[in-house]
Image 1 (cartoon, rainbow over the protein chains, first blue to last red):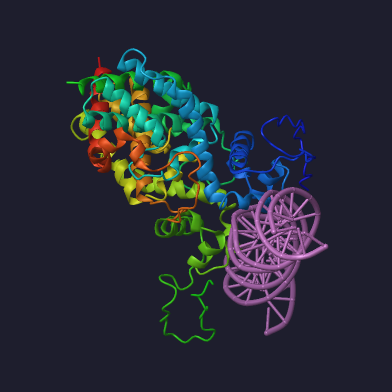
Image 2 (tube, rainbow over the protein chains, first blue to last red; image 1 turned 180 degrees about the vertical axis):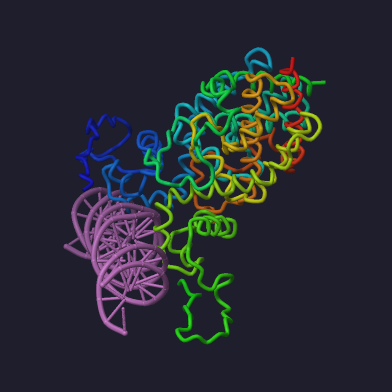
Length: 245
Length: 245
DNA sequence: GGATCTAGTTTACATTGTAAATAGCAAATC
DNA sequence: GATTTGCTATTTACAATGTAAACTAGATCC
């Protein structure tokens, strides 16, 4: 199987950089960054469980073992994927800078993280759960550079150092909860498809025995993640305001 | 590997049952519940990555394939693990019932979930991230029975149906964020141990280039999860109070 | 020419999840 | 009693995985 796919890399060359010799080979040599970005794309397209070293190799037109020259192993590769995504996030966010008011600053940052999560719904769980580089970094806000900028921004708005840290933490908690929840519903069941094998050992999923749930099924049903997010964010901002004294 | 065992069921009826190796059961027939509980214990002790069908079999004194008579596969087994843990949670929580006031009701429930997370720190991520039975169930509050009781409680305190649902959602978001974060730090690095291979492709973890972080390193360092949890909970309760009108 | 390095491939192996066939053994049937 | 039936666990088997080690084709330098 694994048809190995005929190299869909356009051999366009286009390398008019300082490169001296002939670009005879259509195959650009591998490098760490290219592998990591390919992994990001691959997971976006096919999901984490499908990412194997061999398949990622095939995706890059290369044997699996070639990857090991640039990446210590699958586990570290996933760490790298997280860092790449967070870097992308950082560069698209750094421009936000100090806009006008601190509430707006928080708003924009929150929305930027949400967009990240929705742009990479199958990677976000990794961002959310992998152990961070430093133990005090709190996922999903785990890029040192980003945190630096965030704290700097808050400081400039007049918050005390202690308040800045507090805000960072609340912010992380809020984003992790809200986005993990939202993103989790996008990935519909993935592994366990609709074969309803008899694992109903504990509770019946017959709703008729749950009157409250039945009664509120209307309200429960509509997702309303966006609204929830905005509400909770608004609330967080309100709470932060108190810290400003 | 897989030592341990050496199967000494004596074929003759020699009565001395002393066997040091297998901990509890000499030879009771398997059943689904026993397997699931063993899986819970196993993950608690050894962590999810170490749980393989063969090892779980060995843990129960049985070959791997024996499990397949009672469980459709590894993926479903993990679903079952989640359900077992949530059931344990439900039974220890149901007694809480309506205590005195709704703030206290929320407090006790929140603390119960936190205790669950801290009692099973290596299982909580499963509870938090596996797709739930119904799409509107929000992890980690994913037991129908529990949700029913929760809504019932809130209703009895006079909240409107819409408010109940809203509270359920905020509650889930808060708990998911706070506990996932806390539990995540307990499992220190797990996969990637301290071999600092050169994956520092993007950011240096040299703190000297991050003045804000350095400046606030004091505040950042201490975990303070307990305090964060209580604060955020208090805040959530405050917000819920507004919904009561 | 060689020698050495570089970047990728081949081969190999232990471990995984799980399908299929098999064996042990109790109760049921003759 | 002997034998059939049914359940339960084991054995065997296989494809897929991560990764170590050996190998190889080309580029670079003496």
